[in-house]
Image 1: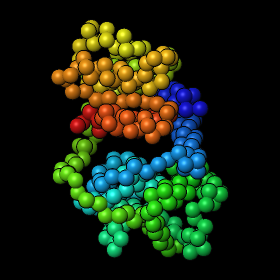
Image 2: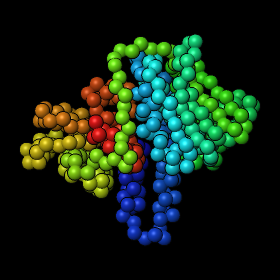
Image 3: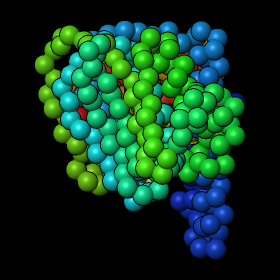
Image 4: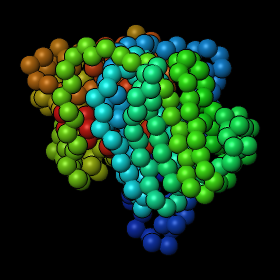
Length: 351
């Protein structure tokens, strides 16, 4: 199901960008919101399935909370401010011992929940010391809830019943997923709320040991665009998807070369020169070749010229996630959402 959703997301975005009939804009925006909700729902149900089947295994490391907080800021600041809410993440230099990606997912679900039920005021993310570690908390000035509601908060059915209330798309399973992830990490959760005043959702993580010196991340300049004029090679053997991706990247001012295989990539390198970025599908229609093979080939061809790599895949296995992390490749799961894709490419090419 990931591949058709992936293609549909790109096609709908293309229709939105090419539409010049103002009367159709409300319908197109409704279509975009519905598709976005479908993608979020699909991801949520897939994540629950993985957690329930025991597929997800924590990879525990020492890491700085500042790295997770920076990712959260990049993920959500535009969404929160788009609702005319205030947004603040309090800087913190503490280290914890846990699974960095799973912690990021827990906090992301907390923030999405805060966005959903907060209509005025704002959202704040902060870190507080606890005897057993560090408490990372998400505060909002939203609707709040009673203690009775808190006691039933993390059940799947509870959130399915609330789906129609959501401003952010999906079936409302975020807190149920966060609860399962926290149990997997053996990390206590904390919830406090006052009806009509707001809520606090937090996770308590063990203290970690600093293993390196972390330089403070600098935020991207407002409206920064690092895509214009960049040369990108696109490896995709599905014609419809390739056409939409090429149109999307070109609309952002990128110079796109489309190839179907590693052999064509080799020819493109000889003819086109150096590339700034490769965007590759992982599963190709070739029995003995994947997108990772082409990324490695480009590294050989451009060994003295730095470029960035993006791998798009419907494979959500831990093995692929670990492989791409080891080889410094950004892994994106299908279906991708174009607006988020653009933000990620800007972050990637800014470094």
